Length: 610
Image 1 (cartoon, rainbow, N blue to C red):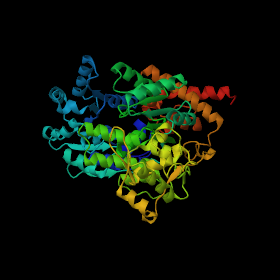
Image 2 (spheres, rainbow, N blue to C red):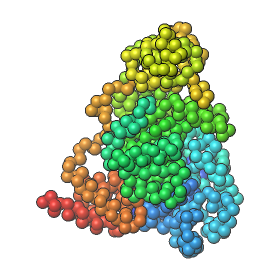
Image 3 (cartoon, helix red, strand yellow):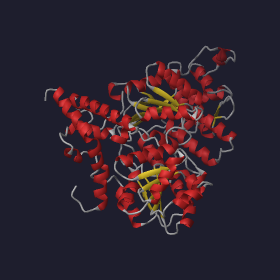
Image 4 (cartoon, rainbow, N blue to C red):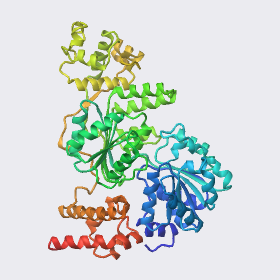
C-alpha cells in the first residue's frame, strides 16, 4: 500500500487490512490525540484493533485491562504472530515468565501489556505498578464489567479510576461490544472519563440468522440444528451444569466431537476442553455462561441457547460469538416460560431480584415470544433505529412463522380455560384441558366436563404451549413464582375475556411447515458461487493451517481466519509476494507462513493437472 498515513501503513503491514471498519478510524484518532473515549462496537466489529494499531504507531507502552486470562493470551498470541511486541502479566505465568515480562517492560520491548483489573487495584498491584513504565494510554476492554447495570459486573473494574491518581493526565479508553445507554453512562461516570468521544456502532449483525423456538423436545430440536451444521463449530448454552454434562454425553454417543464446560469441572478439565474447542479438536462445546468471554474462535457457525438467558444484553453477547468472521451463522433460542420463572426464583433467593432485573427478564421474555423482525427487536432495544423493512435473516422475515387466522378467538379460549380451572394450574395442565387430553390429572379433577375442554383439540399441544408463551409475553397472562407455578389472568387478560374488541391488534404465530428455503441459515452474497475446486482447496488450506497451529501451540485462527483462507482459495496466489494483497495477511505473516500455503496451492494445482 502506497500511503503516507501511519495508521493505514500499520494496518496494512501488521494486519493485512486495506481499509478501516466503521468507527475504527475515529477511535484510533482519539487515542492518538490523547482524548478519552468510549467505544461500543459489535462482536466481530474490530474493537481490539482500535487500541492495538495506535499502540504500534505511537511511541511508548499501552496498558490494556482485560478480565480473563484466556482473552489476554489470545490477543497476545495474535499480536506476536503479526510481529507486534506484546505480553500479558497474570497469575497463570510461572515465576520465571513473570520475571521475563518485567524485564521486557523495563527494556521497552513491548508496545502493549495486558493485565487483569485485580493486578492494578488489588493487593498485588503495588509491585507490578512500580515496575511498569508510565503508559501512554490505558485501554479497558470488556468495559461493561464496570457497570452494575451490565451483564458481567466485576467490582474491581469500578476501582480503575484510581489510575488517574497514579498517572495524572493519562487518557483512558473504554471498549465493549454490548452496552445500553444506561450502561454507557455508568461506564463514563465510574471511570471518570473526561469529555470522552463516544462512538457507538450498529448493534445489528446482518450475517446472523436469529430463530426462537418454544421448547418442545430439546434433543429433537438440537438434532435439526446439528444436521444443518454438520462438522461445523458451535456453542450450546445450558442453564445448569447437569444439563451440560447430559447433553455433552449424548452428543458424544451420537458421534459429535463435543466437550462440556462449566465451573463445576476441575481447572485442568475445563482448560483442556476449552483448548480442544479453540484448537479445532472439538466441534461443539456445551456450556453454561461460564464459557464465552474472550473466546475468539471466529468460525463458530451456530450458537444455541437451550433455555433463555436472563437479559437481552446476555443474549446479544452470547449469541454474538457466532459468525465473528463475518460469514453466515445461526443463533437459535429454545425457550419455555419455566426459564423465566427459574431466573426470578434464583435472583430472589440471592436477594438480587430488583425492579431493574425484573425489567430485563421481561424484555427477554418479550423477545422470545415476539411477533416481528428479530434484528429490528434487538437493534431497537439498544436504542438504535432499524431501517430495513425486512432482514431476510430471522424466523419471522424468512416466513417460518405464520399468523393464526383468528388470534383473538384463540386467546380468549386459552384465557377462559385458565379462568375455568380456577387460576390454580400450570401450563401443562391448561394445555391438556384445551387439547382434550384424557390424562389422569384432567379426569381426576373433573376438568373433562369444563366448557373449555377440547376447545383446541385439533391443535398440536406444542403449538398451544407456544400460544400460552406468547400471551405471557404479551401481558395477558402471568405465572406465579411458586414452586409449582400456576397461570393467572392479568387485568388486560380479564378485559379481553370480557370484550373481544379490547385487543383488536393481537397477533399469535405458530411455526410454519418447514421448506427447503427455510432449512438453513441465510447465505451471504457470493457464498453459493464457490466452485467445487475452491471448496476442496479451502479444505486443504485449513489442514495446513491446523498443522502449523498445532506445531506453534496456538489456535488455528491465530494463523489465519477462514475469510483469509477463502480468499486464498479464490485468488490462488503463486508466490509469497502475491500474498501481500490478500485480506488478513500482513508482512510478518506472509514471511512466516506464506511458503507453506503457496506450496499447498501449487501441490493442489498439480494434483488437478493444472
